[in-house]
Length: 523
Image 1: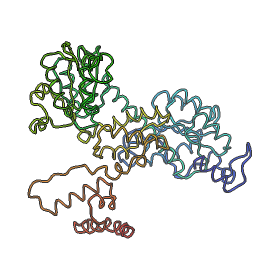
Image 2 (image 1 turned 90 degrees about the horizontal axis):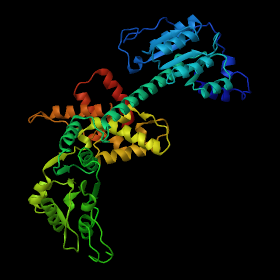
Image 3 (image 1 turned 90 degrees about the vertical axis):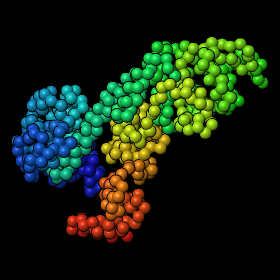
Image 4 (image 1 turned 30 degrees about the horizontal axis):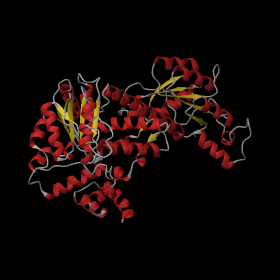
């Protein structure tokens, strides 16, 4: 059993231990060295299948090293772990173990504590210097609480007391391997982030996002006006900055203004500047955003919200390359590239008379469409990892990654608020996480329960209704991982209706028996 389990048992079943005294469960059920663990088998296998020829699981691709000077124990433990599909290496002493650690990347090392020459604790200390990322699990029949605590202080992953059942050794090995897999995935995501981000800090590996970024690279060196379209929260300003950073103007100012956030009466002076006395409170001449962006880039966000009279003045700047400050009579030449953005359909706005047609064509020289996050779910893990690192650092939390189940839910969710919503959800999860990983329980209910609600299923015209129903129920059950109650909620039907339909579609007897038992609890 685990050290923590044995410690709890010792505290509940016997008087509190004193320094140097053996753990009660050890003294009651001592396991002399040389006595094999039950169900023993010999040598480990190297290949991609277990002893029955089945493919190894993901955990089976990471080597587990067993160290014990007793051959019977070594052989028996190898069999126990191999039956779980783990890839096992073995060594009969500390020297052999260290040679193995130097020769290949070992994920987990399970070592006996009492060995001649070098104890398990000494091996732990040396192993951590040779292979810091290897998790070490110590086994002993003669442990004390002080010994276990000392091992933990030196970096032991767990401390298992002999004699143990199969689960008592398999569980910590499996946990350690799962942690190693998660760390490997995090390293992969970080490398992908570094590769994807480059110098422009834009995250995206999906085909649709790569196409957008390729177009950014293509248009950035030109002086053409760019119109960026996309829903709120998709990162339009980041794209605007990428256009600026890839242009000959990159060392000049990048000036941004949100046209929807500033009242119409103030927007004009913010853009074009104002002379002294132009309005109440104008005690001195003030430069506008056009002058501040001279020789650089001016980003006009939410340009679809711009008032008609401001549109007229903007059109003149684009045509003439000069401005006239509010309250002034002299023109001022300006040289800046215009990048505009909107979440509106400007062509529709033009057709309905809310946006000037001539200005629209001046702005719409190059159009960059930013896809919503629901159209690029492959980017969700990268984005979530990026936000996790950012907010874990900001909140001083040691969170190493996101559980696969949580990632699946995040990828299936529709993200109406796009990247901005994903950032908020990830920040919330980082703050609420109690362990070193974000789990599905750290996600808000809307992501957990409606994760896959946005998935679309299409049918050819004329598909029989029964076939449509069967496909909808089948896909919904896949999405909910067989949770029929949740599937019924998503489909808006009673749970018993799902059981009835599944029976009508002819499932196997065993499935019906299982569901009957579950249905008794659902009714």
